[in-house]
View 1 (cartoon, rainbow, N blue to C red):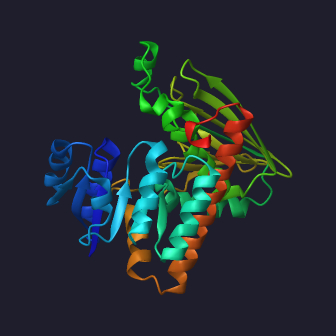
View 2: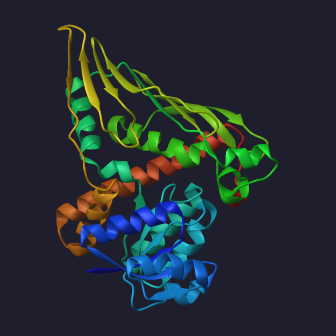
Length: 332
């Protein structure tokens, strides 16, 4: 069983801890937080027995094999490098790092230390995500795509009140693209490949980050339009177009419905598989398979594919940001 240390006590860390335990592949051994109370309050419910506020000592713990990082985006890199230096495998919440410079440095260090680094892009590992990829290949020529993920954040109310929460702060590498757009980019790149060119029409808010925005991904024979927002809600479906056929998805971040709309035969049919498990179960099990069977060439092929996609997503996110004039503190 893989012994796991957790950095961060947010809601997403709770969900990952539940999925990790449910998988039977991980045990939660240690928790790091800025306060002893938070670390202990979080960890006791998952069977952890080490609670720390010293990050360097936490990363050096012999009792843990891997570290899950669910802290603010801007500190992922520092914490990851500390874990790598201590020979720990890493699972880092998306977006994994603030920019390409950090990505390259971390993965080079991980390779030198012979440890794995996983970006926790949950949907990449779900069966329905793979079904869409397969259907896209069957369609052949793609004429276009439109993906949407827009969800009003309760923390935007704080911004309107004159505050600057982490997720809406340049100092913490926040914004709509980093928090929600990353899901859309993962889908586009995994299904269509790397675009030839990109643009980003960002709606900046008073903190300097993008509260919402539209990404344009240009491929040789079609364009994909990606909408993300943390300052308004959208209930639009996501669609992939190919002549008289259209794949209609309820969303791309957690796919529960995949309808093929066949205009030629006037048919529509459901392709999605039902899922009753924890939303993070598939990614947790995927990471465990690699960690438990690292000598298996198939597992290494999976890891290398995930790593390549992570690199491409990270690079394109930075390009989009810079085209919109959004500069993180981590970039300077």
